[in-house]
Length: 275
Ligand SMILES: Cc1ncc(C[n+]2csc(CCOP(=O)(O)OP(=O)(O)O)c2C)c(N)n1
Image (tube, rainbow, N blue to C red; front, side, top):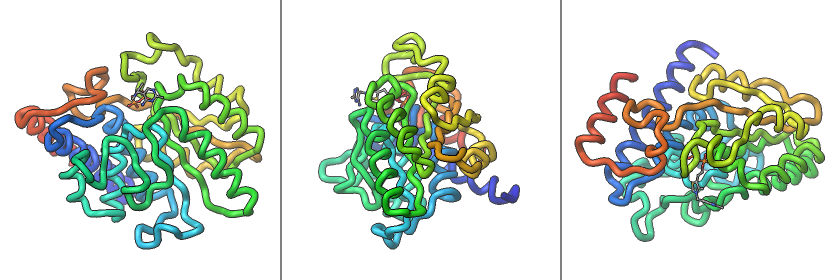
């Protein structure tokens, strides 16, 4: 991919971050900021380069299926989908208001282009395994991309899904773990240690690719690498929770936040410098 295209994906990631901050200001209750900022490059790369999608043909049979398993990350996901053309960006202004299209967690009955509702952690990967298995049985050539949080990997259902993904040789399935090192209650390694996470996943029979998840080129390379024969792929994306805003980066408190006008202005000014 050309330098210009990489720059464009970085630009979109920055715009997604700005959308998240603006929504954390507009939404009186606050939103899940940290785990949306950590995934901005992932959303940009997936929605604008890797996945086959058509926002004007939501039921296109050959579309790739993107599943946000960590459904609390809906604010960043919504920003990416809006920018990709699934619905107007203005919908973010009503984020989590009564009867709005966009809510704190992903709701497929209200958001156009969403494959499954999510928010209760530990369900997206099991469902993705089922969808990928269906694709295999149909000999379809679309792919399934499932995004999980690292804290979410504490859910036992994910480990059953890892077993079955390998068992059914689902090389049409790519899971992505946002390894930002924090869950809701603090650092993952203090709450429930996951390490050595890469080795465990490899031992479950998956092709493991570990990257800097805030680096567009590394993400593109990971997605574009062929699946090892007969294996599902897992991209362990090392990211920074709250990435891009100095007073949020690497802080557990970034998980969920509302900003006053001064904080929002500070954050947006920092992100302005990245454009
Ligand atoms: C089954 C279930 N238990 C608890 C919660 C509450 N909860 C919401 S977010 C979260 C932490 C998730 O951590 P992680 O997956 O690392 O998310 P990230 O840091 O990327 O935002 C928890 C426990 C939930 N949504 N679902």
